[in-house]
Every structure is written in C-alpha cells, then in structure tokens.
Length: 316
Image (cartoon, rainbow, N blue to C red; front, side, top):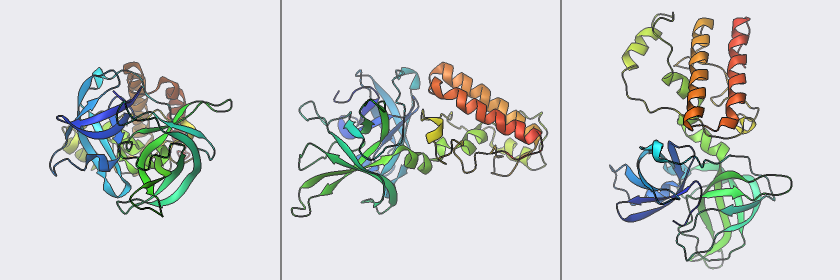
C-alpha cells in the first residue's frame, strides 16, 4: 500500500483508479478525475486501506467542475480510527503528500506558496485553491492526484490535513511536461461544496419525534420523508474555528438551528432538534465516527443556540 494512515487507494475490480483519503469512517474524498474510467452508471468502487483491508465504496457525489468527488464507505465498521485533524493552510507552511502511486515513486513535499488563490480547474469550475511548490521536479505528477496534503509539524504548528491534491501545472516552455507547481483544494472549500457536511443536512436527518408540536405542513412533510433511506450523517474532524463561516459557527450559512426547509423554528422544535443532535454527537463520538476532541465545542454551540431562542433572541 503506497499510502499511510488515512490515505487510501481506489480500485474498480483490479484496475487502480487513483488516490483518496478518509474524511471520516464513512466518507472518502478524492479528485473527480480519478474516477474518469468509471462507466456513466457505475458507482461502486473498492477502497483499499493502509493496512491492506479492502472495503466497499459507493460514489455518492461528483463535482466535475471543481474536480472533487465523495465516496461513501459501505462497511465503516472495518475502518480503523486513523482520521485526520484538519486545519487551514498558511503561506510558507511545509507540506507533504502521504500518497504515492507505487512503492517505486518518491513522496512529494515542499511549501505552500499561496494559501487561497482563485483558480480555474481543468473541469471549468472556479475554486479557492492552495498553490503548492514541490521540491521534487518530476516533470509528471500523474498518480498523485486525490491524495491528502498534510502540513509538516513545526515548532509553531502541528501536523494537520490541509486539503486534497487535484492538478499539476504545465511547464510553459514544454507543455508536455509539468512544472513543480501543484494545486490542491483546502478543506474549507471542500466543506462548502458538499451538503453532507452542513448543519441543515444533519438536522433534516435528525427529525424530532412526531409528538413534538410543529406547524401544520411540516408534520406532513416529515411523514412523507420519514421512511426514506438516508445515510447517517457525520461531521468532519476539523477544528471548530476552521469550519466554513470562519467564525466557528456551525456550517450551513448563519449557524442557526434551521427547520428542514431552512425556515426558523419554534423553541420546542429547536429544543427537540438540539437534544437529538447532542445525543447523536455523543453516539458518533463513542462509535468513532467523529473526532472526540471536537464534540465539546459543537455541543456548546448547539446549546447556546437553543438557550438564545428560549430567551426570545435569535440563534447565532
């Protein structure tokens, strides 16, 4: 296995597709172009973990224009708890790539040249990307895409996951070769692209019991959707202050406790949803689906929102 820790290899049958890495036990992130050989209606892949274990995976979301793809792990109980702790990149950070195409290839590493630049992907989408300089001038970095970019531990900052490697920049004098300038998508951009990691999605799954009084229309909507098969939501172990929004608010816009359709909710409903989410956070932590170190901050924020609503204020 060329990777280590939370880095994985993706396969379709015996064909290698590319690299990826575990965001949680339930989700793997990769570059969308790593899945280019999948047939249009094909969604199942094999996820090869660092210890050699192969587990089933299902492509649940592809964002071609941003070169990102999310894969649901179908057997999360087989995934060891080796999840990364994320952070924001800073210019000058030393970085390393945990994945390499084969055991005969070198590891990549270098420094972050720019932590957030507007960048147009090959797929045509405009994203906020990290611009990286690799010290290894290989001329071709094919096979490294989809792997994790990790900050190297320094005296000031600890090791942390910074983002996912997606593209190499061509040498302008020799376009058939690649320069040692690479682009990666930081975690904040990843979180903003996938609804699976937004508070609204979590709360829609964690509907309160039918005994909780709700406005007419909302109860009917719940009855129509309660039987739908919805995968269990999980939260990515990123420090609370680094979640989308930049101010530590839960992702999803304003950090408020919304209803299933984004509308404000009554105090009783907010309390029910808050209690359900607090209970779920505890359970996910015990099951290893969320970084235990992040649970306390999330619990405090949820409780504060519910208290503010009960006192007649607005959730923050």
